[in-house]
Amino acid sequence: MIPLTYLLRFLEEDVPFGDVTSEAVIPEDLDAEAVIIAKQEGVIAGLEEAKALFEHFGVKVELKTKDGDEVKKGAVVIKLKGNARKILLVERTALNIIGRMSGIATQTRKLVEKVRAVGSKVKVAGTRKTLLKPLDKKAILIGNGEPHRFSLSDAILIKDNHLALVPLEEAIKRAKAFSVYKVVEVEVENLEDALKAAKAGADVIMLDNMTPEQIKEVLEALKHEGLRDRVKIEVSGGITEENIQDYAKLDIDVISLGALTHSVKNFDVSLEILH
Image (cartoon, rainbow, N blue to C red; front, side, top):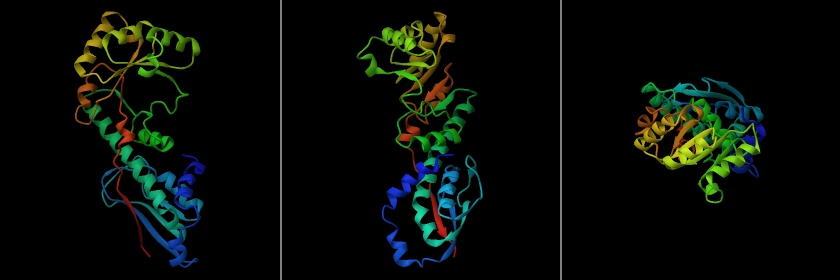
């Protein structure tokens, strides 16, 4: 569950000085009943967060399904009962959260299922290409994906801009000496650097923007050198819903996609007042 204090920030941004429309039009003591409806099929997420916001303002909430369930178009996912002004106060923030998280969860689940359809156990992961990390990372988990790093503090990931300043082997040496507890991952773009990274002791090698054919060459070279079992292989860059199965068939461990969060399509949900 995302902390309520974090969720309230979104509401405070939307209602800095009150909901002037409801305050002008809706009687202060008027109660109402409402429902939140899924307007499309997909994986629902963000219900617990919406529930916490509504309940914070005294609205009674009945969840008709749970986070991670697959819902049909037209399904009622939440029933609400309470002060009409309070329901309308929280409406848009709750719908935004459900819409974004459900969009991420739906797309993640779709890609995970595509990977599983070819008999692969490869993990589908997100990236740090997001500003709404708590919500987005939880949504990826709900969609059966891996959230990857939550922050720069979680693991060591040596990328191209690091290697523009420090040579690859030296960077790995320094990273390994820095902490025995942090995973050391290195992003590479060619076979030569992948071998260097494995020999230098990287725990994870990210093959960035490489074709399936290029990745096969790297995997064969690592096996030939007796290095494949020493490292986990992550692939990223240029992977889409259309080609993910081509990558999933390879002897790799993780497929990461920034598109799970940076260009997610919002899931369509709406709130309707019943009376």
